[in-house]
Image (cartoon, rainbow, N blue to C red; front, side):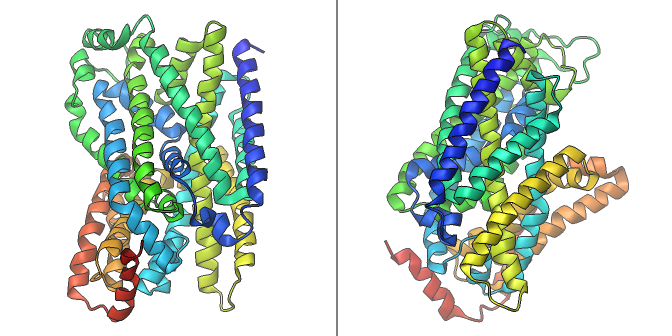
Length: 516
């Protein structure tokens, strides 16, 4: 066993014990369904802000997006991190947080499908939303497993990646099933702290690498960069130093819009606003969460933009997904301090992924246990039964995600490509317009969900017939952005053409904004 492996195992053991302890402590605070799903709607600013930020970023961002876009685009990829912080976080909190908290509390809505049913008086819309969440978010969590598996495989090459996926699944299941939302919120606070420390240390280590030479050296060395012979992604120094992304400008814009505005319609992100305790906490949380996202997002893409210099232009054996792991081993692979820092970074990436995984699993489990099953059953289901079922489904969904990730099931892998954009594209219009306008009708909400679904589905079908499914998957970011735009337009237009059949009920709902 190498020193790097030893330090990483020690760090993992300490981290695992802390997570399990938080789950046990939180068990006593999660004995009702409302507390299990939303922490009793009494969660403070720091916990909510870190929960939002850590759910936003997973190992997929570091291992996948930051490595890929930093390698191909260069310095311009940092705009994705800026966009995430300003558009995906700051603007989301300013526009949506307080209204979401007040309206979901007035409606006693615990989930996104529950909100749709009570806001628009439509059980059918609730069922459809629950199905969409289940079909597309569970496969998304499998992508998180795969990112972590490849990461730990780079440090422990002799251990099968499924072993790491299994350990991650077990640890997540323990504290999630035991403590519910409060366990995830408190672990997010710990995980977020680790992420900030890790990113700051890694940025410092990468910039101090001999091939980079600090911020000034980064620009100068990238400007003089020449692709090596046989590079599958040849580029130029002008491309890598173009602050606006050069030839990748259009691609960059679509990714900024998808990964930023996409969070506005994702139930695992919006659910954080349900639980925050008051307006004062939201004001503090806005600042904290934005700062967190700026540090993590910009730091990740800055690290990715140095990758060609650190690795001397040689793409690692594992391809584009192995870029960041290779950078870690190159920068932190020597000396006791470097190895300790490497262990911290591994925990950082583990934390980023587990926080996203737990949020997605809890959202998916509640969609089935709280929304789908009671809606299709003739007999009413009490809250105790729903909570027990939610705990069981959390276990089931963690297991399903693990199986999907290890088996590489083709249909599941395909769904991963579309999950973020499609879910947000379906929900963003009915969710946001429902917060702001009394004139939005049930028909308008249905039109928004279906238009988002059909935009992605129709475009996928047309592109697949003409160029193959792989081409359609490559266009998934553009499809997601288009679906969000269509949903936002269709909802008010259709609502103008239809009638709200119960205006008194809607007026009563909107009195929530008059309350403190």
